[in-house]
Structure formats: structure tokens, C-alpha cells
Amino acid sequence: MAGKVGNSSLPPSRPGLRIEGMAQRNVLFVLFDGVQSLDVTGPLEVFAGAEQHTPGTYRIRTASLDGAAVRTSSGLTVVPDEALVRAGAPHTLLVPGGQGTRRPDALLTDWLREHGPRAERLVSVCTGAIRLAEAGLLDGRRVTTHWAYCDRLARDHPAVEVDPDPIYVRDGQVSTSAGVTSGIDLALALVEEDLGRDAALAIARHLVVFLRRPGNQAQFSAQLAAQTAQREPLREVQLWITEHPADDLSVEALAARARLSPRHFARAFQTETGMTPGRYVDRVRLEHARRLLEDTSDGIEEISRASGYGTPEGMRRAFVRTLGTAPSEYRRRFHPTPAQ
Image 1 (tube, helix red, strand yellow):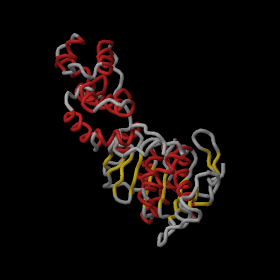
Image 2 (spheres, one colour; image 1 turned 90 degrees about the vertical axis):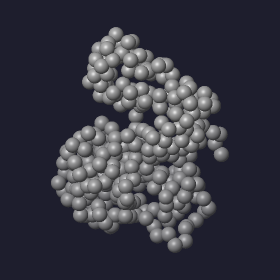
Image 3 (spheres, one colour; image 1 turned 90 degrees about the horizontal axis):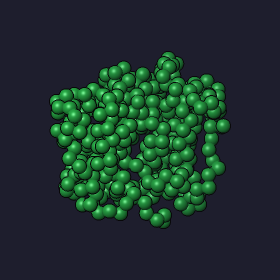
């Protein structure tokens, strides 16, 4: 697989259109052995699609340290365009993740430490954030990475503020994203910043991405975020919460279902699942409401009752607090509509 993509059929907005006064942006993808192929190709396809939509806006390059081919974590061989030592200063420097980030690479760290600050935009996908942190480029920044590596990133780099929830975070010139496909969302956000919403939407449709997800959308569901309890009564309570979000899910009610005292239940639930009963219930209710907003045409009031919020205002507060957006706006972004 060569490090170039140029065979898409995405039409330009007008043949040969260029935006007057806009300098071409150099986008450089860093490659290394053990890189996750989708971390590279997902965002690369977005920028390539943007260049085809509006020619002259992006110059996309891939580079490894010595210019040699790299082997991805899935066994795919990728041939870069050039060596990093010969790559010019990029406008956007993108560092993907993958198994290779779990092994320190002093030469790559040194290159990133020297050249990273020169980029106007510094971007990571998945565990690419670990590479940037090793180079000291994330100190004092709010960032994210794949949920499974957030604790490690925070532990190994205490000067970095790690937020495990969003699919991507933008902090000044630094943008970091969560696991694999979230790199596409972040790339679409960058293209929207450069070329506008219409261009980003055209590229998203071409890639069969329904709509770009906002960065504050959660990485994973309550069931994935929490561990499965070891004891059967607690596992049954977890299942009950998921299947009955509108019921009384107070600690007292759940403890009675598990045949434990409220105090014992709360302590055991947190020990075995990694979160308090209240937080677990909040996540389940939010996830249930999100699915109904995405998949049904039910009214906001009906969804708020079905999800255990009682009132639309209660659901609105939960959405704004967790996702940074109201339920009506969330539905506008994610509820399927006929393609235009």
C-alpha cells in the first residue's frame, strides 16, 4: 500500500475551484512499525477528500523516520512518501496510534520534540497521544486517548490533563482523539474549520459517515465503561438497570433487589464495577435516551419519561452536563434524515 490516496470519485464543489488567498496546508502523517492502519487511512481519506472537493487546499504526505516501509499492527505494509528528516515543516502534523506506541522510540520522540512545536496544528489519533506526551508536547494540555489507555497516560505523564470521556479534545494548537474511528471525526472537524460545514458534510457523506459526531460525545457505553460484577446478585442488578431505566433505581431500591443493605450494596457495587451505583444509573439513562433520540421519532417528553428523567428539563440538564448539548440539538445531529 503506497502512502498516497487519490482515486476517490468525490466531485469538487466546482471544477478546479481554489479559495483565493488560502495557502495550501501541508498535512504530514507520521508512520512507524506497529501503527494502527485505520488511524492513518481514516483521517487521510478525509483530507484527501477535502483536497478533491476543493483542489489546492491540502498537500498530504506520509513519512517514517528513515523513509522505509512500515508494517502496521494488522500486518499491512505501508510505503511512506519520504523520510521524516527530509519532510518540510507541516501545517498539520498527525501522529496515529497502535501497538507501536507502547514501545518507546527515542529517535521518534526526539524528532517530535524538535519539530512538533513548529506545526500550526498538532494532532493525535488513539494512542498517538502517548507519543506526543513522551515528547513533552502535551504538558499543561487537556487531552484524550483510547479509553483503555487513559489511566496509563495520566499516570505516566502527570503534567497532562487526561479526559477519558470525549471522542476528541481540542486545546489550542493540540487536538487529540480517542480510538480509531474517532480520528475521522476529528479530521472532519479540522476540515470544517478550514473549508466550512458544507465541505465537511460532503466528505462525510462520501465516506458514508452519516454526520460528524461532536467531540464531547462519549467514547463508550455504560456497559463497556463499567466492569461486570463478579457476584451474581450484582450482575443481575446491572442487567435490571439496563432493562428498566425508568424504574426506581435509588440505592435503597437496588440494594433491596440484591438483598443487601444499602451501605453494603453501594460499597460492593463500586468495588466490583469500578463506579458508584448512581454514576452507573446516570450513564445507562443517558445512553438509553441517546438511542431513542437517534432511532425513534418519539417526543422529547416521552423519551425523558422512558429514560427515567421524569421531565424534559431533567433530561436536558443531564445532556448539557455530560455531552455539552441539549437533547433537541443531539437529535438534529444524529437522527437519520433522507439524504440530500
